Image (tube, helix red, strand yellow):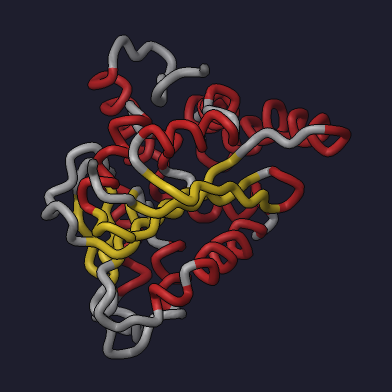
Length: 254
């Protein structure tokens, strides 16, 4: 099986890997949104809306407790809020990158109608400051791949979810066939070059294709989820398999 967690270049262990990822996202935060929209041709917005729609029944319950983990600048959080009743409990958006949270705060400023509907929390996904069994839904978009330990992340999510709570992990994948060859060329050659021009840094957008290539395949990821205590584990490909949504239900510890 591929690596059990993100391993940026030069990282010797999990703690160094986490620190490197944190520093990387702090550094690129000011241009993160612009670069992502340019590189994805705004398809990422479609993916967030589709992910939010997948959990519309949970989001429609005003009393449900929802966490967007590794929330970055809050784009998925905003998509989730659009399916939330006006008087619902705030969605919790957590990330361990202070720079990303600061950037995201601009989207929820005083002139935004959503300002009372989301709460930002600076926290490590592997050590959440939340009570066990307190959440109805955990979702994450393109953040799980950056965790230093995937199994530990799944176990921590399992801890804070209620029995029957739902998990959604939106992540990149590597499509096959002719599309896969074109995608690989773009992802490994073109994307880092564009990222270097816009962001002024080479590392972050060279890390992206490397991290996707090292991430577990859909069958391997589903096996990890089942091993961590989840049931109804599934994977839905998005846009020819360029990305996909993993879904599961938290089962009681036996």
